Image (cartoon, rainbow, N blue to C red; front, side, top):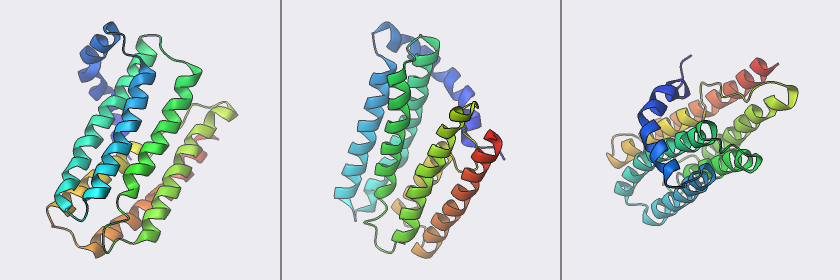
Length: 197
């Protein structure tokens, strides 16, 4: 099953000139990682205090696209400009789960949202990333298998926010999508464990 993560190489090719410019100006991979995390927390905070004005939800897909670019940039700086470090590896994983959690939590204040589905999605998203990180401990590469990896979750979350901003989705249907994400996350965890063994 194809995932958004598999489209990453083409996206990276578009960003490479910008990455080179950032490197020449002394910007480091770790700085980009931290900036992306702080930006996610700030975005989540702005949305949370602005609800129930659903128009603010347009901010979500915009930021998610920017964050996707920043995540690609920090990785390219690390790999292609010899900035990889042990601290960077920690920051990359920790900042990702902090950002994901902050951005998914903004669903909770929305009236009609099934909070159990949201918390289940957050918990399983964290567990899926942990399952991916565990692979190197048994001598395998870090697993990014889908069908509900980080990029896929971001796409669905952004689409849901657009649908809410346009008022074209019912809470019943939205909650159904959240439960579908929960099911896909469970399958993702299974896939990551299976393919690492």
